[in-house]
Length: 513
Image 1 (cartoon, rainbow, N blue to C red):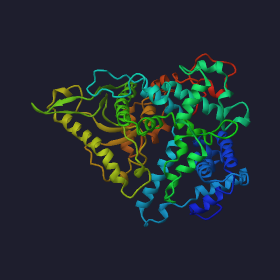
Image 2 (tube, one colour):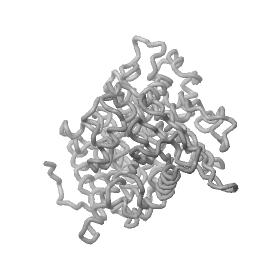
Image 3 (cartoon, rainbow, N blue to C red):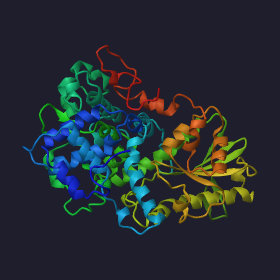
Image 4 (cartoon, rainbow, N blue to C red):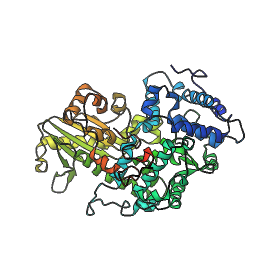
């Protein structure tokens, strides 16, 4: 059992004081070297490294760089271990709240949304970015055409193609974690990679071009972190809020190239969520249009995943005529199995900060995001069961029905009774499922997805993933594999003997064997 240096809870002031004893250059370099050698999060605890979770390491780096003073004593590995121990024992609002389950529900919201993104499969996330934004067809004559994700959008937003942007991420991550020279791990320098090998990129041809993209999207400095550190933060919640090293995971202005305190944060820049905020949260005039376009593409991306099912017919949204003057659209997809009809509604929604912080009204926040989706499923069930609408003739009304709301990011705990209390009652069982869970589910081979869904409903489990260990799956999801094959330094393209292991096909972050 972990033995804390101070009894829980530790006040933030004590944690700060311990971090600030050390020179920030020394401490963050130690963090970078340590992070570069760590296994994936899912393996940390099994290897006795539970203290060294990336969210803790990144917070220590943030506090040290933003508030530390140069010239203080250097940090050692025992110092870092003590600091991380204090971080994991930090005080939380749960210690101030009345007894009862409500306070623990808020704590679980904070903990799962804080830690969850670090535990998503990086291979799937990076592949999904390309598959969603670059490879999902969208008809030009659609009723709701794309507004800004048009040819050349990536060059306007990112300064290069989307594929090259992900290639930069893969290259930086690979160098920081697997450079042949151990002294260079935890860092990245442009002159470490031969210019001749830039032909792995689609359009970038020089270190100067890569540097421009890095400075535009990835690099921060101690001065910028210091200026942006919140002055009036809540000491119980600060660590759960946005860490600027997530948006800018490379630190410039230090000797020996860019410092990469936590390489896993670099990968986060190229995930769909990282790109969503890069395009939609940058106060550009087309930011809202960008996020709307992502939502339009996401719906069609879900359709691509459903099309992978070998034993189902997928019917897209149907316009049902209710009267001479009124028509209504159904849910986004009907998935017809021999023994089940799955009603799928797509929500390109993400947990907002108030929900992630576990505020007392988080169930109301959930209702605001999901009420329409649940009502849409109820309406479609009524239309189908009525038998009055010839537009629905191809959808059987006499089979078991289950509803599914597919979200772009996980909403942890949402399928539990406590989280569903403020959502509308549904006429059929409805499960909220993240796209990551669906990407795995559609590759099941040992049974039908229909049978898995029915088993999940019968057992009252809160997610399909709980039943995954009982079944076998394809080695790869075909849509994700297509996306992966388009990423420079990941795809099998012009292999070179001198490339590092991290740049070889199939050795990327989180790539499933």
